[in-house]
Length: 123
View (cartoon, rainbow, N blue to C red):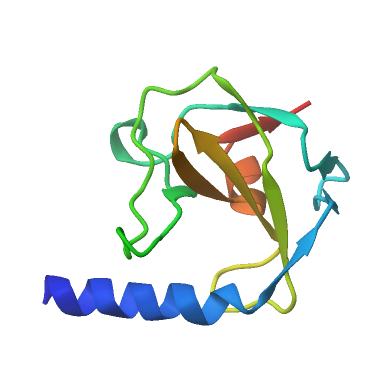
């Protein structure tokens, strides 16, 4: 059952990847504009035990599943590496995704939801 769920998640991730286009800037629903290279701050996770619901490890060949980012990173600042805007809303996703790095690991942020729950703070 677990393998089935992970396989479906991987297929969903691959299917939605083509739905995004790379952009240099994005204006959020609250009117703030974020540009590639900007710095943002992580707030507390909005999930159970302060885990992050809208920030996940970017799937790769080595790790096909999208794992949620661990807790304990609130207050740390990171640089926006890449912004991808969703061409058309699909499922529960809308808006844009930000990609950033912690060490060699790349993470994805569902920007609109992360801003709404204050998992991400823009300046």
